[in-house]
Length: 203
Image (cartoon, rainbow, N blue to C red; front, side, top):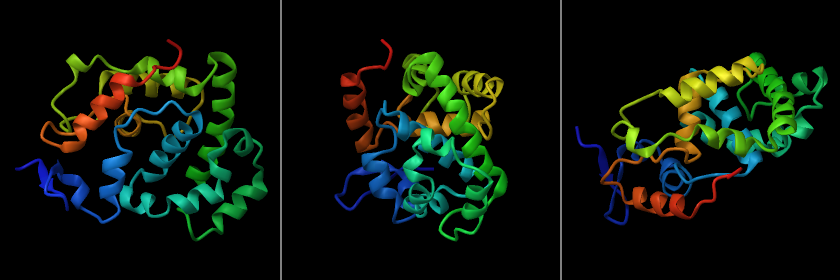
């Protein structure tokens, strides 16, 4: 099966970005580009947790609603949420109203605060798990890795929730810890250039 599809400019891209109209811009400007911003990292890990059992399109089309509902995923603010906030969120039709996932975001916000206190930033910690590019499998042929399993295991030890190895692998793909664009995809080279100039946090 061909792994690419032609975009509106006639250039090849990862085939998955043609599955929904919302995916093209996300694929071209976000997915795989390296991120060092703690808020964005926390947001993505939370959204990956919400995606569990659902499609990414379901989450992506609701992303602005999620951001509004969770105060921009400012984990210092979310960590102060109470049961009243949980009930507020369960009534918000603009997001996925799953009590366990909502409560996990609040829990994880508190765990994020603890991690920042220990490590200085989420970014410095997460980027320690960046794999050696030479050891990566062929793009888009894996759903977990040794690194995603290790990060998942460490986060669970710290009390994080909804951070299984598959969820963590998707997070690593999206936040640029790996470049999983297929070889023929025009965006792969753009991501590689971004990775070359990216300053790894904590190094």
